[in-house]
Image (cartoon, rainbow, N blue to C red; front, side, top):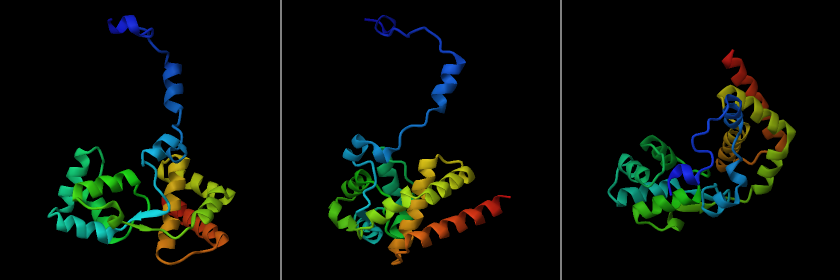
Length: 191
């Protein structure tokens, strides 16, 4: 069977309005996609990549950061040596389990040896994300950085998590005030 026989839209043109409407559709947030979560493509806030453990495993494997990045890229992960080295200098909570698994496989290491448990801060992050002040900060950050609101929210969330991983666990109002001050400063710089 030829393609045009099996495809009812073969050879038909789409209107410009239909193309523009399709381009305006924003894909759903990956963190709410059950399939993506099952595949390990969504960060697990309870687990983080232990950067120092990854560095030791990479050195044991006799690989440079560039070589590890190239091997992971051949597996379909878009990484740079600089990004890997950044993770090596501090633990990273925003690395999805599937990528941690790919790193472990590439380095012939056990996943558990490359990860550490994150203190349970899920409730605080959920409270933060649902706060209207956080949503407004994410909107402002998205405008400044040309990001979708969801991507901007994840970026701000990772900044908050970085503070938590430095040992600080600020209160919700304090965190929101800090984010608003950050947005004010970034908007001032952009002028």
